[in-house]
Picture 1 (cartoon, rainbow, N blue to C red):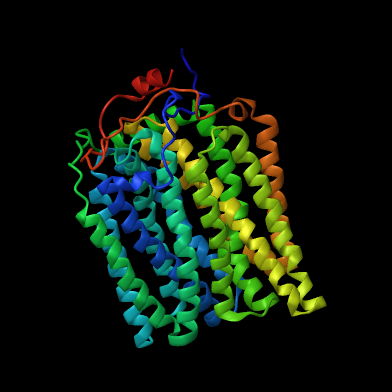
Picture 2 (cartoon, rainbow, N blue to C red):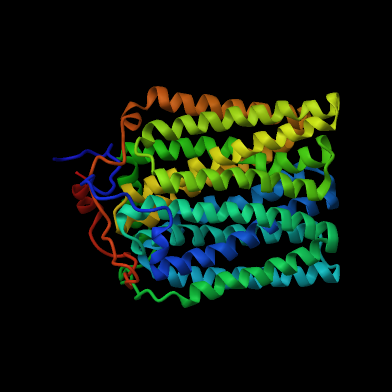
Length: 463
């Protein structure tokens, strides 16, 4: 039976038992990828707690907080699509190893300079831009490598496990970051970040994946052809278009709550300080962990229905969180528990969208185009720049509570609009059959696919 581009392919439903939640960890190289992501995420969340607090202490400005976030995400727009081509053309493990080594060096230099008292605001912007540039190349390589390390029927579970790891580290890293800043200062926190990140370098080095064939045709002309090839395939596919549109709403108006609004809520509204901000992120991470493990276990099939409704629910929860922060100041500190309860559900909705959207794109993409398809999300992530910058300005102009309510309402409208009007996406399921990635046996040394068939052949497979 043929299938059009609206199908979201996955393993056939042949009656075989569904993989267990942690079965993907039986594969050696996926275990190492997961372990490296463990260190990567712990360091990242400690940094994302320490850096906003440092910016607020240095400037007292929500606008600068949004500006640092913007500078960090601009490289996603500048380099994201190019990084997707690089991920498809060259060895993905080597890309990750080079990137992680440079990140380790950058964190180490920043920590030394901070402890020595040489850091000024422009150094923070420089760190944000450098970190964002390297992340642009790390993410498509890491995500595209997963299907080469586990069987196809474990793909959604493996992506969810990676997301679960991110959120375990959000719990630990956000708390540790806030407490470390409170106890030993920002310099000590960044020294710890550098030490922890070395674990990501080591785990990536230990991976033993045969080198993939590299793209022989190089040059700007070939780069443009590669970009067009990936974009043509992606935008001809209703499922991919639907995910990218939802991600545009999610990243632009949803993600600002964590990096712009949350520290302002912690220090300016709830009056819980640096450690309290870390606890806010940890609480959201606890909910996200539950959501990720639920996805790893259940592996929902009707993503065309689930994803837009999750974005709408996420927006509604952000509105609920904003409203809940009015209560402690008016009715006593006992009501302080309510914003944290809402944050549990915010985290669960956030990780549900992130896990399922990434898994859907990997299921829908042929191996030789996965890096480019995943990198299309970099355009949406780059919109965190606009969202974060305008969030900081709106918070200063109208107050953070009203600003968060407006952003949440836009998520609600965006999710429901996609659900109502994108019928080709709404009817899509992940059990419709279609093109499959080759599944390696446990502990095999399957190479990451970077060469192979053309986009036309990939489309004919999907059909």
